[in-house]
Image (cartoon, rainbow, N blue to C red):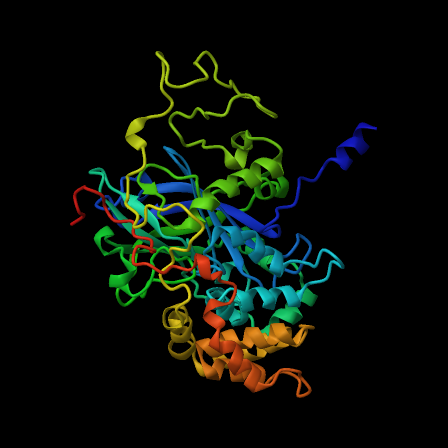
Length: 497
């Protein structure tokens, strides 16, 4: 009876996002002293090594789905620092499909199975892209060969959001994280991905495991882009630095090396180390802080909340892979609860402030930054919203100037393979209208690969492109005044030099 009871309870809840993945242990080694910019210990002493656990994953596929399918990939790092655990939770894309936090669940649902028949739902995938103009920058990457990387080992990783680094003097800069694969980025073509999905559905997991078992060490170089807070104005920049659907141009904000991320040990048990690993972008250490990015602000809450629900307790820090074992002193403010097996609060007061001990050190309070508008509402503060010349500029540059002709042809083919499965002409028409707003060659390249008997005429696509930039945007909520933008400047404080 006990054996059967144990078997019945041997699975945790599947993650709503990033359910299928694998991971490994290793270390981050700082190679460039960044103490001028941040007081975070792991970045401010060249030669310092910090233990890490890195989990890779597909984003929307279930646990048993082939890991070579077309999908974004998760790239999540847990750093075990002396000041507590620090998580970087990102993707193999430098951008995301939405910037409005309320649409976060919709991105995932649009790429998951239809709840009515449990089939992959291409209607919902393309309908979301058709109605969220800013999503098509990531959509371009999704349908390129970036969407089918050759396993976990051959893809770059990105923090995606804009973060702040704060130094010992309380001055801050904005940063973007890049993890560049030292072995070089490699992707499957769509036919190769289809073949590998059939031959070895676990290719990415098997490849990472076998590589480390052979004694090899997959390695990434961590680099950052840096921006001064006085420059954090989209009117100056020509783009919104807090818009997670946009990138920072590297010619204006070059990459600076910080360190190396090295994997050298496989997990001892998948369930203990990979399945129960819990990440949150809200897990930061002194020297690393948030930015006015609304999606980041919301992810800082809902990632941790998701893990509390999935693992059944607020005491997830007691699971070995989540334990801040490098911290000199650790006392969670969580009190009691399910699975609490450590000393809880011990003899210390379980409230603050008190006369005996203080868990909440005020010196680590977040550094303030200013915002432009003093009105709280659902109104958008994104600089490019509703403005086609701004919204599509980066996607257009990527398609025309970053991609080579072979890449563009792959995008056309990969997109048409999925788009031909859409059942509703209205969705196809609106989606192609989004592509036409980016570039005519992009839209025509996809349209011409659809079946000849397709129901969408080119004239309908041209009509749809005229309103593409405001699709899904309520007029009352569009930005329409000069202070409807995200700033993040330094308020009444010393400007960073």
